[in-house]
Image (cartoon, rainbow, N blue to C red; front, top):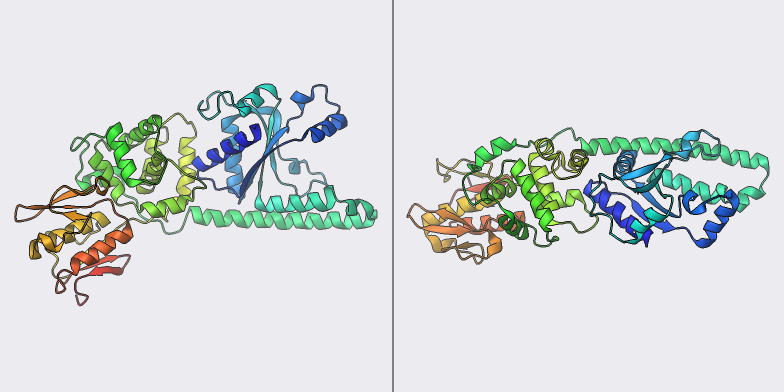
Length: 449
């Protein structure tokens, strides 16, 4: 039905903007309720004039997200004239404390992406046949006030049965409750501001600096195309939804706008990102596509540079604004897999760091293989003498001083990377090396130095 389709539509719109609502729910007005409203209001054309035959309610955690949600609705749908209001602003005593946006929409904005509305679906038919669809947006604090007021006063049989003096006392108490609700909303906004803009922000490298650091030129390596990108995404995000052809094309556009024109340069850019933490911070309410994961990780990697470079990508005019909102979830909180190698056995030509997890594993494997032989570092599905590791390992060749090579996994999470670091170093207990992350030793051959 149209209500169900609209609920899914709104949930998707919020998800892609990084807005986590408390609740999104839709309902269709019953025939009996429709008839009662028609009789009480005496509409000449009830099908067109009753604008809440289908209604959806969005409950956000703070006024920050409520305002953003209202902006999304206005940018996505055609709003009926005079039907974008907050009844609580009308300053009547009865409405004092009520705080909820009421927006009536009559269809999608002509500039919206056309593949969101199911062709021939119930929602598309509803927009053609009925006068409007009402969207209410309120905060959790506003919802608590409204639900209690609705039950105790607006539709309260007991309230109607008491004398006028007691009713006035209850009205005053609801006014006091509205002041408390307003203070609670303001406090929640203050909390959101600190979370979105923490006082200590992790450094994000500029895109040009990152390419130079990794020695990856846009013209060196295997060209980044539809097929190579799809393979990389499948290996990096195997549990997420496969992207459509349109999605892959969009992912290519994002990478190229960052100056990443080879699969090696994109792989190097993502290698430092803590993929699991980015996913947790984005806190998606449902499954996401692999291209969305790519978008989030490039945003975590490059921050405001990424918003500037890709804010106009795709067909959505609000993308830059939505990226900025999503970045609020990552800003100052996204970790990078930065490791340092210390100890008197660290060769002079090996910088202490910072290194990515995968590079740290490669460097340790190289050092131990050169000192104790290749057999000392071989690990099933992770380190091999030949390029025969599983495709998902994204193995990289590591040349040795003996003119031989080993192949080392690069697609590994933090836990497995640190397991391999310890396994490699333990092959030579007297090796005076240690690996440090966040000022803590995570792997060592000899803890003495």
